[in-house]
Length: 141
Image 1 (cartoon, rainbow, N blue to C red):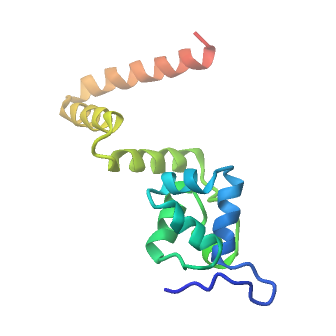
Image 2 (image 1 turned 120 degrees about the vertical axis):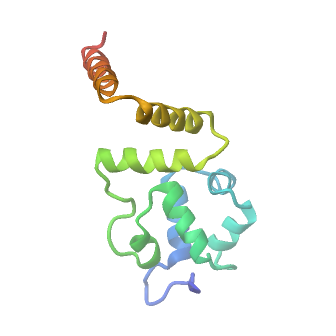
């Protein structure tokens, strides 16, 4: 899908919204490009309307920056996704697990595999330990 980055009838288009997102995140073009894993000149091209972002780039911005895709594409709704704490945790965990080379991703995967290999009694003990750990964290111990 092609996006016209210019103003139409006073309406802000995708290209301008990309710049708004970058500035809201307080990132330089280079920092934003690094976050997305694309070249800085692509960001500059989008912001100056010299190039239009592909669907893949729009999806990447939304995934990496927690941007509401409807807002980025149309300007409708909130700029950032309004997620519950549980949804944020699930989204972050999914992003983390996609990074196959991440030490954290490997640790999480191994923990899950190990947990699934436990019998029900051992799972219950581990859950009890986790609950006690969280209670102690809340108490500041």
